[in-house]
Image 1 (tube, rainbow, N blue to C red):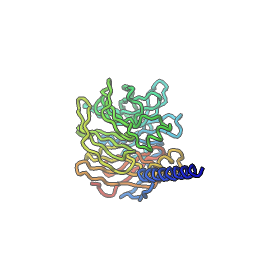
Image 2: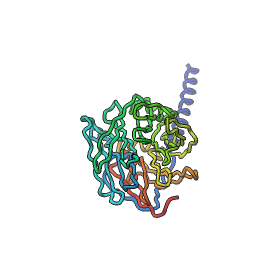
Image 3: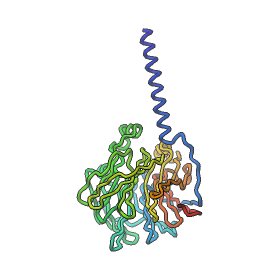
Length: 353
């Protein structure tokens, strides 16, 4: 009996140590042991009470911002796309949407494509016909969106963000394979399971062109269309691919570790990348469950040519929690978040280089 007690005590002690080490390492890589120092070289204000502005894109020629909005805490509420003038953000209004056969519109990632004829198209990931996932292609007509096409594929199973590469060509990220809210998803996060991938579609056929991501998230095509950028939230890195413009195939050329839960990517006019991020991932998880649990916001600027990383903005979660996207035009920075009812407009005092 004494031997059994001793053995049991040893097993319990070893198990306790292993669990403690695992938990400490989890706190470490999720950023929970790091402090957040709020800063921004300029002034920010809430421009419009747009709920769940998870992604946004700027039409720099027409000086308009298109914003994907979805009330994720109230999934029965229909989502919307907002249009915001760069020079009068307080005048933001929801765009008129077409009838989509009574489907509940639930937009996520979006991207803007400008055709050779000057026509503007928005590509939008729509979760509203779940469990089926759809990519919507809209023609922009003033303050209206006209549905041009809907793309489906068995490979679109957990789409997060989208990057348009042609009038009917795009990449999208599947962030994971595990079902949202399941135990397998939780274990996948804790053990950094690399089930995320990138899918290429030419409008008819789709194929996986990159995999091995622990929560593939933001995605963007370079201004010259020669490269593709992908962020991985759990891996906390940015991956840079050369792309075959005829086949969509990708070749990994670099990986940049930023040490934060990276989200959406915007390519600025000068080619630099602006990335909304979550520096404390467990705080983000708590915020997702309760809006009163504030989650820090963070914005990075990555200069691919100079290989420099600059933290442009950081807050402890107010006035905006869980920043997921940041995009600039001139000295104005627009920041959106996953859940809050706010879009920040920030005026930078100095040019960021």
